[in-house]
Image (cartoon, rainbow, N blue to C red; front, side, top):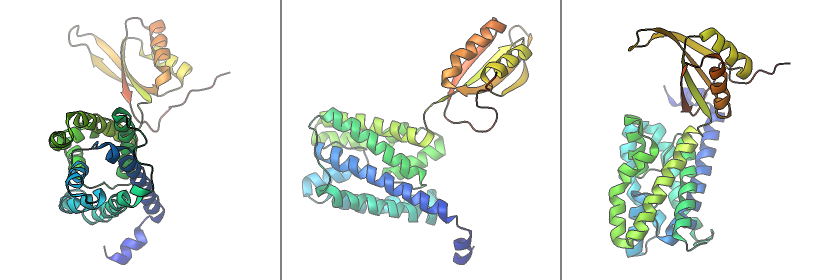
Length: 294
């Protein structure tokens, strides 16, 4: 596809929305770095950011500039594994406004609003994770070891929080040698919260429940679920491997607040039913809303 055809087929509304999300995420991340992390010498990750803070500590060079220089080889890796030119343009844009923005806003944003290391780690981690999650939503990365983290997550399915710990842990150990183990421990805490907040933005809250019901009264249980909860039910036949008895397995998705109602419905109809209720992040389609009856 040549450039003219690509321009014609581009969804420009989606394009601008994604870049707006990236820009918002980068600005939130800048606030986390300038307001909470740099003043307290806490690293929100063991990769490029921690390395830049350490280099700046010894040389006095701006943190953002050092991050930009350290990101260049990692951008090359990301080019081959995360979308080539599509990745490069988005991530290069993110890196420029994020890394240069750290230095630009350093004298504008309030720095060191608290001396409490725990508060700096908590609020910096939350804001940093939100910003990074938004950037990932815009199909970009902050470069640095976030590139390696994203590749690791896509290749292995690891949650972002675990991938961050694997990729950043070693450099944080070096960080502890320079700034002391107390700050290194707070950096690990910030890193963990950073990953959790990123997971939350990427996957959303666990607001739904998935239920598996093994019952010998499938029609009655299904009718009770339809009538009182108004959600769709799927069924299939199964056999107990110990008893060799035939059963029916029902599956449904419901909002978290209805989990106890579901258990009460089933208990009234089939006291011997076996129920497993799990967590889910998102659901679409099917019957997901309560039916209002008169």
